[in-house]
Image (cartoon, rainbow, N blue to C red):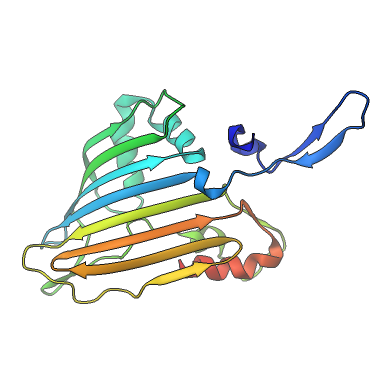
Length: 231
């Protein structure tokens, strides 16, 4: 089954040989995005100076799970490697606690919980703080959409899905001044949704992104690039 194939064997040409019959070439299927999924529930407790404490719980399946097993298998290096990953998005991160389930058990998804301190999560502006509405920007345009047009197809990693629920807890007595408008995009290549609501000193953000294909045909590049810029 396609779900049992490593990524390099999905979307690949293979030959099927049967006794007494001619060999036939066919292309293996890619697994659907929901089988390569990362679901996160994150709480961000903000302080008046712009620092924050983050608690993240996540479940990872499919190709990403395989990569995480390989990267975090050695317990002694886990916190350092996790800190390096978070530092791609924030500065001077400190990991206070990090736990994984049994990474040697390939019959279950990867699950982890992390507690992190970020000294410069938000930017101070007078008596207010400002921070971006997404924890982990997709950066699709930066990675795959820098050219105005393409002569060849764009090869992505694999079909994948990301879901996040983030609760921002503002300092006591603080209120939300403004929130970005909700955003939804959906086409044959990908889907994205983002929405937020504020109540008291809390902001609840729900977002999801799905990349439906592993390869973007050059004829669809403009559609993909527009999608990448929007998300």
